[in-house]
Image (tube, rainbow, N blue to C red):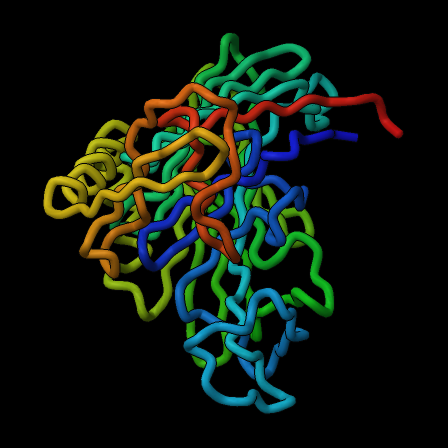
Length: 334
């Protein structure tokens, strides 16, 4: 059984339309920790359709924009969990290895999460970001030795329930080097894709999980979700990512985030723990900026509570440093 520090939560990454929670591996994980949500991909204004209603959950729904009493048969503006992707290290028997430890740092000025993850027989450094203007999650893994890597994609929530049911009215899965999932949320059609930056082996479909595998010391997992409301098609996202590669995608992403701060910012001082003040900056073009940014603090006290909190909002600000550090420890099974 894994144990987490009290101030640990999954890392939120967003670009104004898309939002994902990323876990201790640098990709999505199934555990629900201190936050109310699991690691999954959401899109702004993509709600459960009336055909697939979710039970109302109080902490999610009482917001200013909800100005009417919902019908008993509608979804109460509940964002639909569209999908999740993750990677696994496989042992000699093709079983997924357990994580031994993890340390992470989030740079909120460019919205890039860096993770150092250790497995029983290998260590990996992971760089993760949600592209600033494309519906694309990028996860680059650099291992200290050659490993057998499996990348997986599965649409919908981790464990469908009354609170979080399967949102799709239609779903079709297609394994391949570019694994695809086509879906409908009522009248809204969309599709997802997962691929690696190098030729993969043994594409497969197990239940509702699509997978691709390869042996490597370095690999980049790319996961895209595009629907009719996006400004690009899935084919355009895949072609662009393959053309510019990881370095090109990272450069585009960081340049966009730096431009938000260069264009406009508002700075204030906020006291978040005894004797500790952090400077917080937010772009004035807030509707277009992916998220708020945090400038370097002068204090060296232990981390305090997040400045920004709430449902699906990033816990970006920690009072003791620019980057956010978290550690995972594994205890004996209970």
